[in-house]
Each structure stands twice: as structure tokens, then as C-alpha cells.
Length: 291
Image (tube, rainbow, N blue to C red; front, top):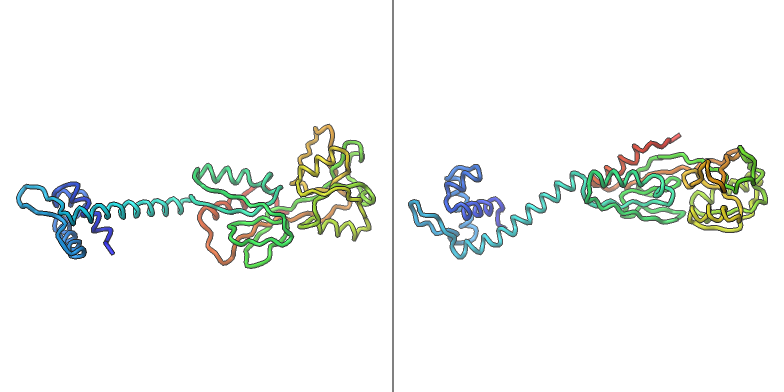
């Protein structure tokens, strides 16, 4: 195995043509340069320089030319590796984030923008999957509307209350009694994740909405409500209903359903990259309440 330090000395002498100038360039003594070239020649089994003596410059031997050509490739690769490590430590690289619609739309744009501002070459990949049993697998970070099982560390980042969305005029202003949902046509998400818990709450409260359409698309739910198919009950983070909306209105429920909890998880048995650590730090610093 050729010593990169010796190859760097070979390159300096070849460029400067004298041991003395190479020593100045490298910050060594001339004797140290001579010792390193001697060590390299011992390693490769032959002379790498012809030394005419006096003021004449040294010249590469054919063996020296061969070693230098390959040595420069090794030095370039080592420099590239060192640069990549430095950029990695600074936060460059790739981060894989498991997410779902409302987090992607409402929380992650700020995080991704900050990451890209800090590291323009950062490769941020989002993986959306609607699953009742999330698995972190090879992901660096995972958002889920509930606790995540397995060998993970996790923290709750948001309490997300539910509200009723209806066409304007269906309900009077103010809270909607939970009992008023009984028998009402409703557009809903598939009965997985936190939606399954919400539907169990309906049953426990003796309320049986008439679900006429299901879609996993948050905007699809709102579009169906806008079209008059029925009402919807959605977590606030999934809503895009503003006070000035001339078709839809949002109402709190009375009594309220238990809110959705959004958790952030990461592997407990793996070291996160600096980029993933920074992404986690940005998420935990978002201006969203935990209570």
C-alpha cells in the first residue's frame, strides 16, 4: 500500500524539480524530503528520480513517472473523499423522511427550505405511505399520527384538534354538537391510522354518521364536501378552509373528539447523519404547540 504522504512528496519534487524547493513548498526540511523519497523508492523497488547532481534539476525515471501518474489519481481521490467527509459533517448528503399529507403540506416546507438554504446540494427525499402499522426501516425520520412501534426514539410534536367542515349554511355559526353528526352524510378518509380511532369514538358516543365516500386525499375530501356530497370531520392541519371561503365553513365539535397526536420518530439503533440531525432539530423547533 503506497503511503499518500510519500506520494505527495513525490508530486512536489516532480513539480519543483529540486528537493530544496519541494521542501519549502511542503514545509519540511530538505533532509526530510530526501528521507521520504528514499522510503518511497524502497517501497516501489527502484529509483523514482535521476539525480544529475549540482544545480541541475532532478528528473523522473520511467518508474517514477508510472508511480506519479497513479499516485496523482490516488491523491485526487483522497482529496475528494476528504472534501466529501467535510461536506457530510457540515450537513450535506441525503435524508429520507417518512411523512403523510398534512405534514408534507403544512410542516415540511419550512424544514426543507431551511435545509436547502443551509446545504443547497442536500438530497431531501419524502416517502408518503398511509399505513396503520408504520415501520421506520431505512428511513432517517418518520412522522406518524400516533406512537410508532419498534426500536425507535420518538417525541410528540403536535396536538391536532378535529373540526367539522360543511358547506356554508348547513350548520349555524359556532360549535356543532357531536350528536348532530348522527345519520348525516359524511365524506371521510379510509379507516386506518387516526381515522379508525375517530370512528370508534363515534360508536362510543352513540353517533353513526352515514359515510357516503372515502378518499385518502385531504383536498379530495374537501372537494367532495364543496360539491355537496356531505360534511367531513378533519384534523385542523388537514384543512384549507379560511374565514373568507364563500362555500365552506369550519366548526369545532362539542364535545370535542380527542385530538390527533403527531409524533416524530427516528431509529434508536443507528447514528443519524448530520443532515438528518439538522432536519430533526428544525422539526423540533417549528412554532407548533405540543399542548
